[in-house]
Length: 503
Image (cartoon, rainbow, N blue to C red; front, side):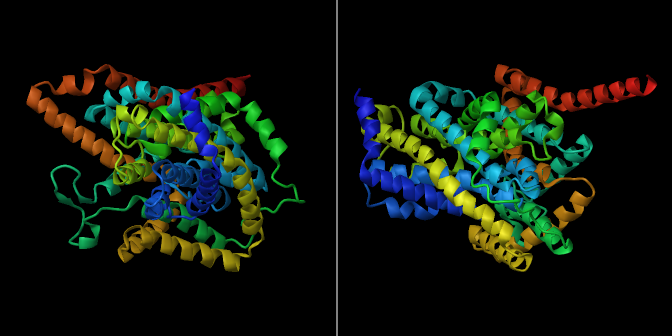
C-alpha cells in the first residue's frame, strides 16, 4: 500500500508538468537527425540539479521516453532514423508515407510506443530484482555471440540477397575497426589522420548512410517526395487501434523482446527493434509485405524500442550497470544527487524509486495525446513543404546534428562521404541497415572476442570458454537458425515454383 502511495506522488501538479514538458521536449529533440536520446537527456541534466531527486528523475525519464518515440517521425517521413533505435522503423514506415499513409504510420508508432513503454515500465516495477540477475550471467563471450547473432539477423533481413546483406555487415565491421582498438590500444586504418583516432562516429555514419541518399533522390527525382492524403483524415486513430488489435500478439512479443534485450548492458533499442522486426516477419502470414509498408513492421519495432526504456532501468537501479547509454547519463545524475544504486533503491530510497516508476508510466501515457498532436502537424508540414525548402533544411539539420555530437568538423566530412558511398551501394542492392549494425556491433564483438580469447589462453581451454557455457550455446543455436532460415525459405519457394511450372 505504501508503494502505491509513492507511485501516486508522481501525479502531483509539479511532477505532471515536468512529465508533459519532458515528453514534448524529448519528442522534438528525438525527431531531429543526429540529436539522439542520449544527447537529449545529457543536455538537460543540468536543469535538474536544483530539483527534488524524484522530480529530476521523472523529467529525465520523460525526456528519454519522448526522444525514443520521436525518432520514428524522421524515420517515417524522411527515411532517416532520428535515433539509432528507429533504424528498423524506416523499413515499413517510409514506404507507408510514400503511398500516402504517413499519418497512419505515425499513429501506429504512437500507439506501439505507448504499449511498449507501459510493458517496460511494468516490468521495471514488478520484476526488477529478478530480471537483473540475468544480466549478471552475461560475460564477454556471451556478448561476442550476441553481437554475432545481431549481425546475422540484420543480414537475413536484407531485401533480395542474403549475400549482399552479409557484404553490408562486413563493410560495417570494417568501419568499426577504424581508430584506436577497443583492447590493446593499437591504431588502425587512420592513414595518419588524427581525426580518425576516435573512429567512425556511429550517429554521423547513421545520418550519412540514411539521410544523404534520401537528399540525393529528392534532388534527382521531379516527383513529389511524399504522396499527400486525398482529404484531411485527422490522425486516423480508429484505424490505428484496429491495426494494433489485429497485431496484439506481435506487440506483446515485441515488448517482451525489448524488455529482455534492454537488461543486457550495451544492447540497446537498435538491437531490440531489429530482433523484434525479424520475429514479426518470421511469424506473420504477410511476411512478403514486410519492407513494402506493412503496419506490423512498425508495430514490432516501435513497441520493442520503447520497451527498452523501462527494461534498461532494471540493471541500472539494481546493479548500477546502465542498460542503455541514456541510462548511463541518468545514473550519473543520480550520483550527483547523492543516491547510490543497488538494493537500497528499493528499501531506504523506496519513495524516490517508486515515485519515479509512477512518473515513467505517467509520461508514457501522456505520450499518446502529445505524440498524436505533434505527429499530425509534423506529417502535414513535411507533405506540404516544397522540395526547394525541404532539401536544404534537412541538409542543414544533418550538418548541425553531426557537428554537435563531438564538435568535430571532420565528422561532417565522414558523414557526407559515407552518405555518397551508401547511395552508390544502395544502387547495387546493398542496403544501409547491415552497414550501420556492423558498425554498432563491431566493437561489442571485438571486445567480447578478445577478452574471451585471453580468458581461454589463461585457463588453457579456449573451446570451453567459447562453447562451454549454456547461454553461449543457446545464442549460437539462435544464430544458426536465423542464418539458415532465409536460405531454407528461399529453397522451399524455389522448389514450390518449379513444381507449379511443371503442372
